[in-house]
Length: 274
Image 1 (tube, rainbow, N blue to C red):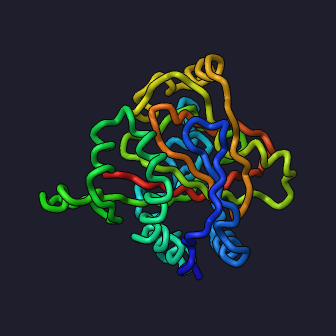
Image 2: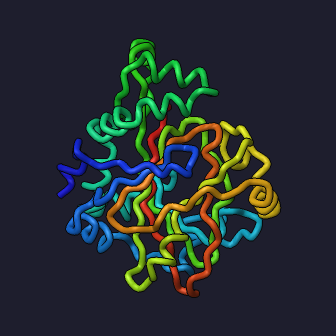
C-alpha cells in the first residue's frame, strides 16, 4: 500500500513567514492510505495516558496530558505499531533509504543554511554520503564515509488543554515531519490553529528544551511575551508538514480548548543525524 509513498513530483510549498523553512506537501497520502492509517491508530483514552507517559499528570511538566507511542517505550511500540500490519508497513517505508534520500536531497541547501552555527554537522553534511540506518555504526571506515541518519516515527496524542513550550529541538535533529489526523466535525477555522506554531526570535539556541530558559510554564509565557508568533501550520489531513531544525527554529503547540473529549492526533517523523 505504501510502496510508492515517495514521489519525485511532489509539490513543496514553503511558508514564507517561518524562519526555518516550514513547508507543506499536499496530498502526501492518498485517501486510501490516510484512511488505512487512521483506522489503525489506537484508541488511547485519557485515563490510560499514564501508561504512555510518566509525566501525564505532572502539572510542572510540559508533557502533561500527552500520550506517546515511540521507540523509547518498545513494549507499547511493538504492541501498537510493529504488530499492526498497516502501521508496520507504513513505518518501514518511512525508515527506508529511498525516504532519506528524497528528503535530504530535496532540502539539501536549506539544511546547510540552517546549520551555519553548527560547524561540525555542517561539515559532515558537505563531505559524507547519507545513509539510512537503525543504529549508528562504530566502524572507523563507516564514520569517515557516511552520515548515519535515523528516522524515528512516533504517535503523539495531546488531550484537551495540552501544550508544548517553545523550543528548537535537539542537536541531532535535521528535520521534523508531521502528519495530522483532524476530527471530521472540526471547523476549518479551528484546524487553522491546531498545527505547529513558529516564532520570530533572535534568541540563538542549538539545544533542546530542558537545557534552555524555556522549561517551565512561566518561562514559556515570558518567551511568548518577548517574541512574536510568525505563523501556525494548518491541521489538515493527508498533507505532510515539516521544517528544518536550526538555531532559531523556535516552535510550539499552543494550548487548545476544543471540548473535554478532544484528542489532537499526529504522527511525528524525525530525521536525525547520529
